[in-house]
Length: 271
Image (cartoon, rainbow, N blue to C red; front, side, top):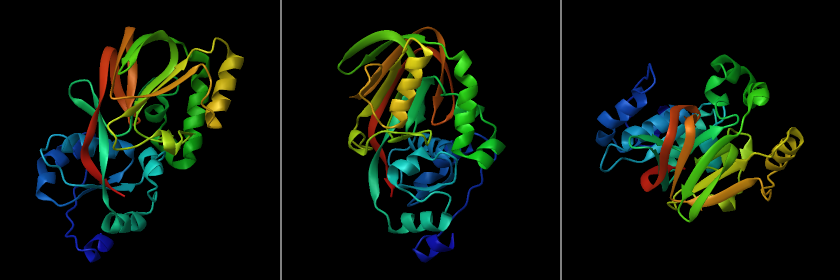
């Protein structure tokens, strides 16, 4: 707070006690401030953005990344778990246009909505394990899922076409970092261009092929025929039965039919 005060800001603190508080505070009070800054993980940032989406002219957003994976911070090059450095960035940084994802009719996300293999890891991993083990907690929890990974039949419609198949994973994202483990090339992702990255992993067919695909992705090799990465403004997913989704690492509900849209730069993020 002292760094922000020395930078010319009068600071007001709001303390959250439960899920949804950040959204409510942002919607009710943000219009009265020059900057809204949030302290927490990507889920907290997601909640703040959901609140700001209810305003006609939301103020710029500053971010103190204090979570485990911090994919948004990785993408933006923000200092993690260092409040003083983050405060300096807010004081001296520049507001940049930032796309927000619309999930269905009334929900939003900051950087990713995903289904399939490993997507439930982020919210299923106990918080104390996240704090002690960091990224390793995600990996260990993900390994426990290996025996129960099953392909999901889906029809996916996007800007330029349609595809149908069995997929192990699918996501719509606006980030170069996914779960702090997989990183997309910086040249592939632009945070304020009105386009999202649609990523689909087709069923490799056997354990050996799956292992090869995982190795390729972790080494940032994306030329596998089983891996689809393309740019789109919107995507619609239809499933045979309800499929669970996550939004920014939090539980996002289960759907048989869901449309995801990129809302072009409704907010500005300071970095």
